[in-house]
Length: 216
Length: 315
Image 1: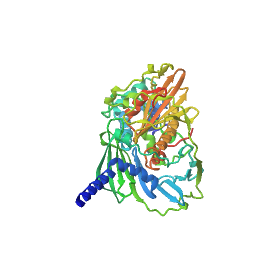
Image 2 (image 1 turned 30 degrees about the vertical axis):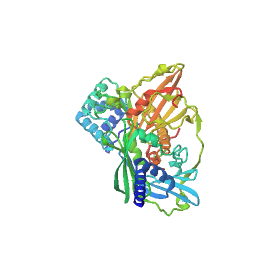
Image 3 (image 1 turned 120 degrees about the horizontal axis):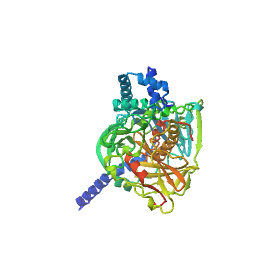
Image 4 (image 1 turned 90 degrees about the vertical axis):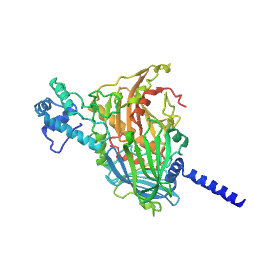
């Protein structure tokens, strides 16, 4: 399952990874509660730096380690390790909603398909980090998009159409299933795009950079 | 009298030359060049903080069209097209990944839709004296007319019209994706043997299968200016999933509609310039999972997700 691993692979880091992946055991929780909060903050900052180095123009996953740790400790104290919850605080100014915390699932695509090697391992690793699933649709909206139309369901007279409410979290299994399907869609999209933009085979370069998984 | 004729001819020639050098015409040349030139080049693809170098070749050999795309950095995986047959080459059988192969041959590129492009972008020739991969290039800038698409910059070879560099530009002028040739030859000495996989590699050959065209059961209550359906019908991907395609002539958005029995949360994913969004909708007793993928800003995907509706009246 999804794990953050660093070079040292310390017990604390493994426990932190497990917590981020909603896989924390009671032992992990105990380790985290007994850990030095400054060390944890440092580790989170490290994750943040890695993520920013890979994708400097993307929203930060862990931009406020203090807020994150406070939230994490609150949840641990309640004995309810949450899902892949990481801090998603105020970040890029173009985000419409600037609530302090949103939920972000971090599926690790490169580890989800052990039997099949990625086309380009380096790229696949990068892609696994670069994919960010943001649950709850509005966080990516920009300020000017408040005019977004609500679907006019009444216009469909015969069928009864019901928009489904966003669910607040994905299980790791769901996230992985989702990614396999999504990988297939990404490939299909790139292939079709290559036929519409008039650049020969070149758009196919995107396809080989996508993480690969078991085909459906 | 003679002077008048000469002046008229000069004016005419000059206006023709000017027309030939407009941004849209350069884009047309670019599109045509991929289908008409022989080339052998190496380019770098950069997206989402990752970079990969690849080699692309194309040639007409004995009246047969050959084309290949080969990874130079990772495992030596290649896609080879010989006329209508596509061959994928993997170092070993275990490296084979089903579903990678394109559904249709690469050469069936659509013609440049100039009117759509003009609706969506201000197309400017901004510099005629650029140099990319040791070649003289013209730089074009496509500035989006609204916030629903990214900007693009193209560097096009002056003498052949070939694309030498392409940047996708996001908000605040951020580079989202880049393709740039580092070297390219337009008189390659290509032979059929150059497109033959190594004996010890694993190859998978695919013959074109026409995609099944099915009735489109969905439409959009709104589309960004210039965007339209590429196909009036949908394409069936499997028993439960159909695909639609939107384009403004340059940017594309794929729409996948899948019948499912499980609700999923509304979610967005991004990889460089590519954004994917998904949302579940229930129509009567059937749940559908809508997945939109495109090289457009997230808000475009989100807005399209909000206006997709049952019915097929997007004509």
